Image 1 (spheres, helix red, strand yellow):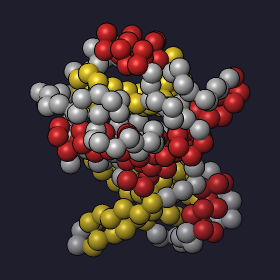
Image 2 (cartoon, helix red, strand yellow):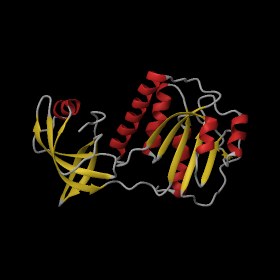
Image 3 (cartoon, helix red, strand yellow):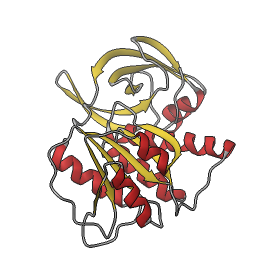
Image 4 (cartoon, helix red, strand yellow):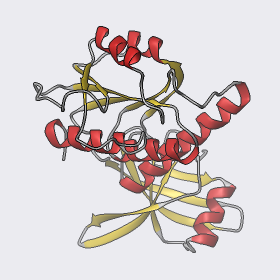
Amino acid sequence: MRTAHPKASIRAFTLGSRLMRLSRFFIDAPLSLGQHDLPEAQAHYIGRVLRHAVGDAIQLFDGSGQDYLSELIEVGKKTVRVDVRQALEGQAESPLHIHLGQGLSRGERMDWAIQKATELGANEISLIISERCEVRLKDERADKRMAHWRQVAISACEQCGRSVLPIISPPVALTDWLAQVSADLKLVLHPVAEPWASHPQPKSLAFLIGPEGGLSDKEVALAKTHGFHAARLGPRVLRTETAPVVALSVAQQLWGDF
């Protein structure tokens, strides 16, 4: 059984009459009841960093939508063995299905956008290559960045309690993404568009957000030909990493689970 990253968060559970705060870990393999060995990196983090001991309870999830209450039955320098005792219904996903098309940006800005979009319930995040993108990824570097961004999403799920990971789709040209994305409502954010208008409640929503330099007028016009409505969130121009936080928060408040 493999885990993607030795990082945990704390989540409260009521078990019987006790309120338990459990360290939470993603396991990158199907979980089942019974005993399992966790990998060395996980063992170090659980035993040396968190200083858990035999008998402590932890929470595991595998992205299937279920969570698993587990007990540590062996804690060594290089190995940790758990007994998965109980399968629980995981955190429910928002009734609003959100597909975020996020323009590629540099370094921490991209990490921030993916992290916050995950916390705010995005179901799929597509990385968009547009006219003003300054980031170009090829071959091995692209693979490393995709693995890194998936880990960003995993860590966000560990922290916020989500039991299902969002899909992080590889970088795709804007024209290709526009041709294939499907949703009840499609919005392209643009600082000179009309304010966000009222729309009938959708079951699925696609957002298009440009990179650091924004989308060109030509690209916004192209998005409109594919059924997107141009909209702005307010009087101030938002950074590329701020826009998804605001947009997803508003959408979840209007049509989701906020």
